[in-house]
Image (cartoon, rainbow, N blue to C red; front, side):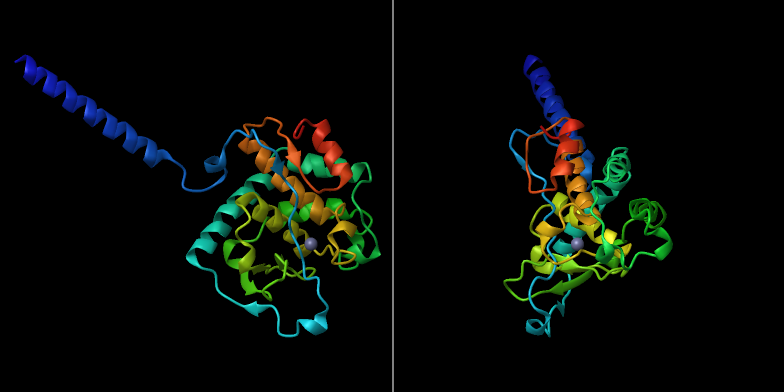
Length: 250
Ligand SMILES: [Zn+2]
């Protein structure tokens, strides 16, 4: 009788373990920002890694070429888009961009403004933020698969005011937050902001690079349970100062 009771207890225990383990597995989010929650003990790079075409157009006549996304690449884009969407609706996103605009820390200029509707050129940041609220981010099916020449650092491109971002299929192995940053960056070009050149350093304080870096920073911050973290980043000094003042990065 005692052996039978022991056997029954073992069976019940094993069964409970299976159920608990099954529940944990089943409730684990398969995608989205919740699945990336972690505590950061290391230094995090939150630089906007977006790179546009940098070589002379006469050398790249036949490039970029159309391609197709693999199922894995599409899943990467889908998960990155979940993160990007969660950040543009984050309570900190608009106020921080507005803060940079109000303190005149967003670089504009005739070239950057030249495709923005004339009526909005006196307050371009307000126009861009309004576009985010009205038109949101791209849908997954908007992203177009392309490949650039083998050694190109180009992550993708969007002509000013174009709504279909080209994505370099060879540059999708750089982390979900980084790709989410590029998605938000490229959306600024969809809303008609241009860069003054293809040189990143000359544009790091314009709105496209501000929002790209801010997206990555806020995604990391939320993944760290809204606690500040140590950052290694190549970004505009004004944005760096603001993120430190707000205790988002140390
Ligand atoms: Zn850009």
